[in-house]
Picture 1 (tube, helix red, strand yellow):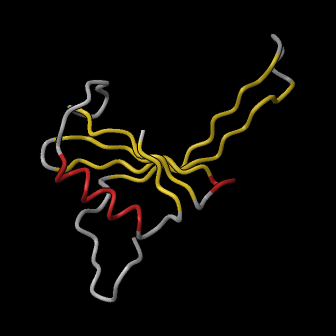
Picture 2 (cartoon, one colour; picture 1 turned 120 degrees about the vertical axis):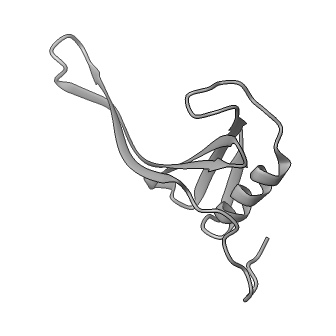
Picture 3 (cartoon, one colour; picture 1 turned 135 degrees about the horizontal axis):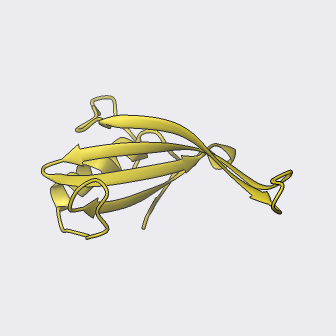
Length: 100
C-alpha cells in the first residue's frame, strides 16, 4: 500500500528495542555460531499487544506478531482495528510486511 501525501501514523510504538542475540558453541563459548542484530517494535493498542521484528541484515522486511492478550502473553486475540493501525505504521516503513 503506497503512502499518500495525507498519510499519518494512526499509532506509534510504545517502545523500540535494538537487540543482539548470539549463539556460541562448545563449553568454552569461544566459537560464535550465529549472530542476530534486530529491532523489536512494541505496540499496545486498544487493550492488546503486538510486536514487530526487523533483522538489520534484511532491514526492508518486518514480521508482525499478534495481536496478543498482553505483553508476555502467547494467547492470540482478535482486534482488527489495532492490527490495521499497526500494519499501517509498518507499511510506511518497510517494503515487505509479514504477519505471523
